[in-house]
Length: 198
View 1 (cartoon, rainbow, N blue to C red):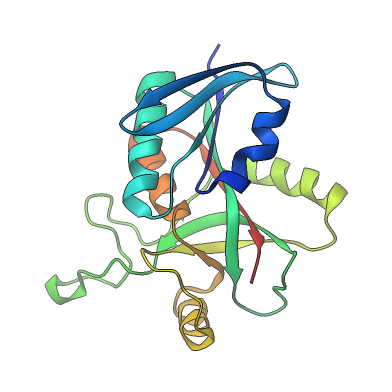
View 2 (view 1 turned 120 degrees about the vertical axis):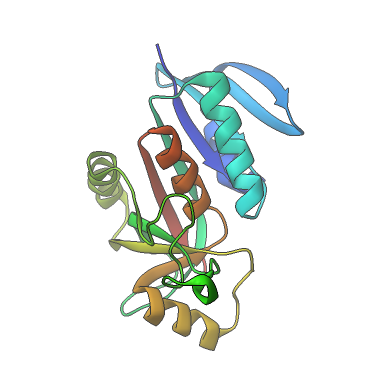
């Protein structure tokens, strides 16, 4: 049976999952650690990709090629942007964008990713809806919308506002767009969920 693939960028994002994983087996690939086991009788592979788009893409490609997950869920934290997004809220991605991808001098639109020819990389609607429904049982404010990814830690409020306005984003982070990109290329359903930390 194909496992559920779960990717976080930092230790704290996967610690709770690993604490409840049964029959845990640790596997090393390309300097990354993958944990195989079961969470509530569901076969899972959990990995920490480290921050940044390349790290996230490498982790996702290895997970897909080695474990053939039925879906990939990217979890983590993000900066909130846009109206009514506050610390402690959750954002479930309808789509991801790569806000720092810009080949517009060669023609085309900023954010349109070469090779796949899209600006918005859509996440799986069914998985996103399940995540939203479950999250609403525990969290007061659960949003859906665009999550913007780039290879920079965006902490400056004017930059956050600019990215939010330019891409109609609700959160800004460093991995989701590249994970969605790899999943699209491999035809693997994916979802991205973020807790707003700042």
